[in-house]
Image (tube, rainbow, N blue to C red; front, side, top):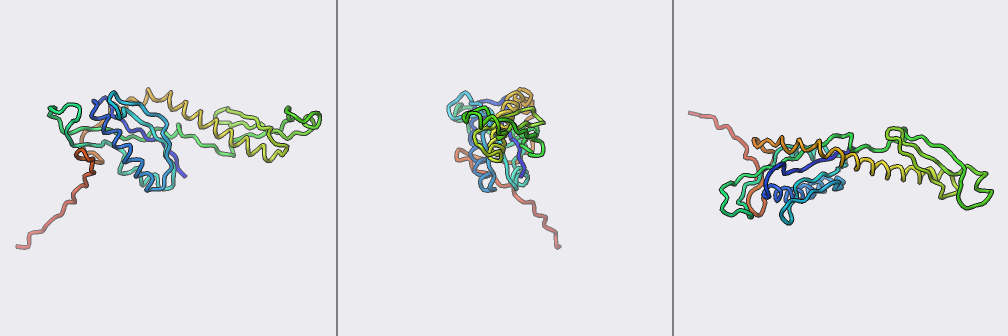
Length: 220
């Protein structure tokens, strides 16, 4: 199962672009569900207007991830009249959808976990001190470690330690994501307005399908 993080951003665009991000986000999540993908909002930056989104980062995981992403990554266009500036002549608004570095989506590989049996230090008196039922788990790539001594069963403590380590690594991933957000602002400057991957139109935000080009041969 592949996992990645996608950023949908208004770039340095105005409130109208932030409104488009909020609309696209709903469509994006609904589409991800149709592909049976799991999603999690990692970071959301609100726009200045109510109900708008400046930028959002979403973690996705699933079998058909590549197939889902193909028609989404790139520039997205909305054709419509601004609700914030009714007399504004501009009708075309652009946002970007980018795949972020996979290093921010580290998943635990049990082969990279070092387990060590240690003596329990909790309740149980002398019996607890004589039995090495507690488990210390070290995630080698990050150096994160946890200890589990909830059960008298070493096997159960090993399972608990793995679960807690996954939670710690997930928190680590989110921290790394937050630290990398400043670098990802380059995406805001790289919005290309030509050849959008998707086009939406009107206040009802209907997707515009690309018309197929049909070559008609002259039989005369």
